[in-house]
Image (cartoon, rainbow, N blue to C red; front, side, top):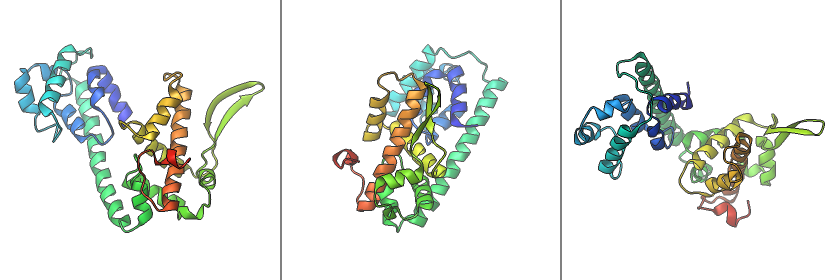
Length: 259
């Protein structure tokens, strides 16, 4: 079960907490929900008692006091379904959060191994400088691409990845766009993941591209899908550029270099 499935539980029982989920690496978020899975688990305490009990759970966050007081106020206003703390539903929710936390910790170990293994390679560090690309994604890109400098032009690299959109068409009717099945699917997936992370960050050129792409109708699922593919392709172009030119990514680098 993925994190989106777990967020379904949050949507049901404590929808206001979704605001604090910034990435799949939010260990504090998981630990908090294990201790306070529903609004009732918070509102049964006075505010300062809750803050004291939750203080160590949220980690070293800035403005911890105000953050916890904000969560306390949201719990009192929550529109989540009322559910008993000892119910099977809450027990199931906590079980899924525990599993996700274990996977997060395992991934952290894998990242440490990948970083140690590739730390001497300049292309690894160039990729790591791009928003959204962590140790594991960089490892996948290098493992699946080989030497990126062998691609004389970024279009060759995009073709190798398979970043081209095709539409299902019947007569004069054009269907939803989707990625073709040509190219390296693992590479496409790696850049898709990196793009998703970058889009969820506060500010970078990848996020701006996504926002511009979907501004016509952010609720259009097909438009959002194409926007994510476009951002992933942009990520691949930038990855090729920084490795080819042996430079680190700098904010909005790809704009000034026309890639």
